Length: 148
Image 1 (cartoon, helix red, strand yellow):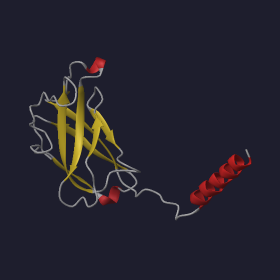
Image 2: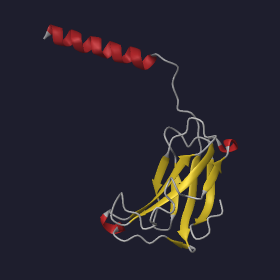
Image 3: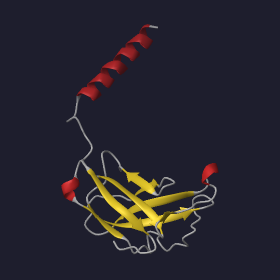
């Protein structure tokens, strides 16, 4: 019993030491990205959404100057709106390809037939460094006329 108490005490001391040490790491500031994806002015209709198979996935894929950035994704709501906060406290500023996958039978399916996949999407967006610690709205992105 004495060794158990001693071991527990040592563990507590070590844990407190580790918590007290270091430089108070905080994740790097980033940007919260919002927007809305539509097709012909209407949100993408997805069958089987009610049972968890249908979804619209929006991805930001680093392209060019987004140093240290990683691919991020979000599921769009029924109205087409999405919000990406990324790891830590936001998305790294820089240039991204915006991909959209319209899943009707779960991951791996795409009703858009890959036209807006990470490899083929014609849509690029810039997340400005001036928006660090803030929200950047990409506005409405219409897949019938992707202008970005």
